[in-house]
Each structure stands twice: as structure tokens, then as C-alpha cells.
Length: 197
Length: 197
DNA sequence: ATAATAGAGTACTTTAAGAGAACTTTCAAT
DNA sequence: ATTGAAAGTTCTCTTAAAGTACTCTATTAT
Image (cartoon, rainbow over all chains, first blue to last red; front, side, top):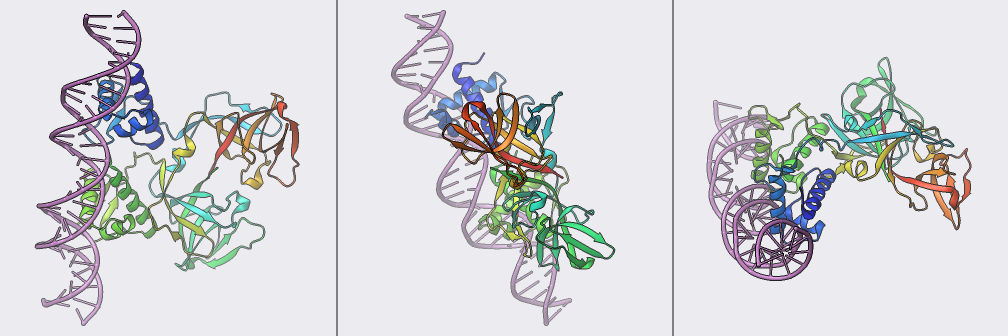
């Protein structure tokens, strides 16, 4: 059975870890809970560990761990349904989840911030983030990060034509460019796109 | 369990290798991270090797290798730089990172799959996912999930005009709709958008 | 009254992070 | 093959911050 403060501290730690991916320091917990003495915090964290609601990895800083499997779910959000104009939200019958980790993780993933409008018709706007998977090989129709003459980098849609490579902007007001294959170096393909408001 | 610096160094190395195809020297890592002492860098690289997050091929220069294992959850990805057509990737001098958990989590977040083209000019295409934060209050210009007459749901940009509410599609071929405020129920605001390829 | 809860505060120990010196090894240009 | 510069290695020293272990006090419920 937890006391009021223990409950608050446990919640605070859970929230902090969920949001920041690492545990808070005692002082940070204190700040969030308006408690000035880290000695007090320490006492209750110890108590929570004794009661089995928390764990500690060694004596490291930020070494508090949550017990159970409640962690590891941060990249998963519930898919509530589909929304279309003029209709109620079409609820998804089964419980369905979107796992962003598929897109986000894996070796060789990195993010580029897009400048310019060359891909607007593909819904990639100026300032958007694209998640790129590093690879040399790409298929027709992929959006790729291409290096031209080992000099210019650009984000375009790829089309191979024999020994030629066409880099196609998804923007009606721009024209595709055609290069000999050996001038083009594929650096990666776009596996995701994200925008934050 | 990685310390803050270990985390930073691991990401820095990952980013460098992804971009340059070879591992950085200790001094280069130091430059990127604003750390003057290569002895310090060395200590943490060794620690990362011991913890299994890095490998070293012999005693060569630039001999750091990434281990394939990736049980690490990356809600944080390195921001490698900005990409614009016709220029090299503009490297980011400081160590920037994109934290997707800001967008993804927090109380009352859920995902909707968008059907239809009513927001294409805002870069939200048919089939895209939008991350919605549940709230009753929204500001002018927000993209909101609105319930009309407790019946139809729709995704539109919001404009309040006295006791009227205007729901504006971001699509030139569609026209805004105006309602009395009491017919409209704001269910949430869009805080993020994502697409997977 | 007394035990449990909640908090302040002080003193001490440990860890993370960084600077830097001195040394060895690797690599590439002669 | 020699050699000098760059890279890596091994130390020590320092500081700031985090964690630990107490004591003392106040409030509240039994």
C-alpha cells in the first residue's frame, strides 16, 4: 500500500521516464513536486524500491528503473480510427496500434530537415522531417537522397532507365533531371516523413 | 545503461559513420561535441565498447564499428542536417537531435488515419497518420478534429468569428463551412503528422 | 499519547565529465 | 626503410552534480 507521497513520486518518475527516456534525478523530482529536500525524495524512492514498484541499476545517476513491462511502449499509439470529411470517425473495431518504432529505429536511420518545395506534391513540405535509411540501392519510385558528382545532395524520386538515372521532383513546376548512372550516388531512401505542429 | 555523454557520443558516431562512411577520429568527435580532451572521448568510447554498443577493428585509425544489435529504442534520432536541392547536405554544427517522443506521447494522444484530400495543401494526404491531442480548446489556425452536430467528424483548420466557427479545408477546390459555435465540438488538435513509406 | 507521514536541512560519499600531459602506435610521404 | 605528423592510449588531477545517511520538526490519524 502506497502513501500519498509515494504515489505522487511514482507517478512523477513514470511520467518523466516516459517523456524523457531516462529517469529523473532526485532534485528534478523535487522540483516537479515542489519539495525542497532531496533527502526526503531519497527516502521515498528507497521505500518504493523496497515495496517493489521501482528498481535501481547500481548507484548510477539517473539509475531508477520501472518494474514490469510498462515501459517500452512509447513508440506505440492507439489508432483510434479513420477520419474523413462529413462522416463520423470510423471506429476501428479491433484494438489496433500504430508502432512508430518500425519507422524510427533500426541501424543507419537518421533525420534530415527538408528545405525547399521540390517534393510538395508528395506531401513533403519545406521544414518537414524525413527519416532516411542509409542504403546504396533503391527501387524505381523511391524517394531518395542522391548525391550528384559527389557534390550536390538532393531529395528526389528515383527512376532508373538503363544506364541513366532520372531524378524527379514531385512538383509540377519543376522538371526532372537525367544523369548518367555513374554520376549519381544513392545515399539513402526515405522511409518516413513527419511534421510537428 | 548509458550516461548522458555516452549516449551523445554513440549518436555522434552513428551519425558520422552514416554520413561519411567511416568512423570519426577521437578529435573529430570532440570537435562535434565541443569537448577538448581526446582522453575523455577515449574513455567513453572504451566504455561503449565494453557495454557492447561499439566495436573496434584492430588498432587502426578510424577503426570504430557499430554493432548490429539494436535493442535500443530510438525515440530520438540524430538530425543529420538540412537537405535542399542542388546543395550538399548542410551539416549541423552542433549536435542536434529530434525527439519524437515529444510529439508521440503525453496524455490523451491518439492517431487517426486520414481519408480524403481535404487537407492536401497542408501536406496531409490521403492515408497519412495524424497525431491528435485530446482537448476541447483550440486556437485559430489549428488543425482540429471537429464534431458537427454530434454527428459528423471532420479534420479542418479552425477559425473562430464571434459566435461562429469556420472550418476551412486546406484544399483550393473546397470551400470553408461556417457554423454556429454551439453546433461544433472540438475533439482534439493535430500535433503531428506522419507517413511511412 | 503515539505512530505514521511529510518535509527541511546538513554532512558526507560517489559518479560523471572534462582538461591535459606524456606516451605509443599507425600511416603516408619521402 | 626512415621519419614526422596524426591518431590512439594511459594516466592524473579537478570540479560539479548526484546520491546516501542522518537529524530535527510539524502535522495528522488512530
